[in-house]
Image (cartoon, rainbow, N blue to C red; front, top):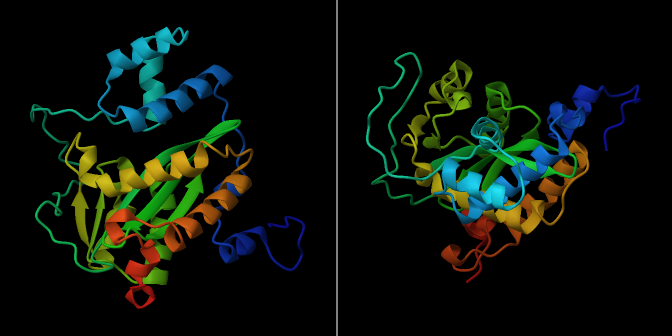
Length: 273
């Protein structure tokens, strides 16, 4: 797809034409050990089954599976796969006043039209040799994925670039909801939303279910494509994700959408009676 030897078009220009993040093109497999990669894959699959499991139960599962893992190693690998345990908790800590945090705006909101609310998040994607990260933007009314990108690093600039492309292509939403991750409290992200007069909504601390729709998207992406088709390279992963999201948006029926695909609700003129 990308011709690095082309004299007519630079690699950067080619990536822009294909809407491909250049970090995926230059991706080199992670230096994690094979055992760590197996553990991370196991954790990623386990999260879809038991997101309420904490460190102690995960240690038991791994040790029963034959892995010799201590708490320090497990915590690092949980962080790498973005494990967020679901559990009720009291407000016993004070938020850092320097970090930009915003209230959750969706609790009593009726989402009644496209581009009213978008949700964004990052997830870990296991590969045959290594791993990458997937960033996606979903329209909550239609479940239509309005933007996505893959990268081997989780930077705020990467997220902002993908979000800018989605806004340019589909228009801006009224609200964007995210978690409180560093990518979504960074100045460049906050500035982009304020510049476009987009209201900023953030999940409560420890409340992954506040962003339940994109969590369901991750389940679909991983169970229906990623686990069945482990990619060898970043380019192969990008191509596979491109095919899957075309299928997800344009063909895959959703029970909550009267068994129609998201495109029929994002573009109402395409609805079938």
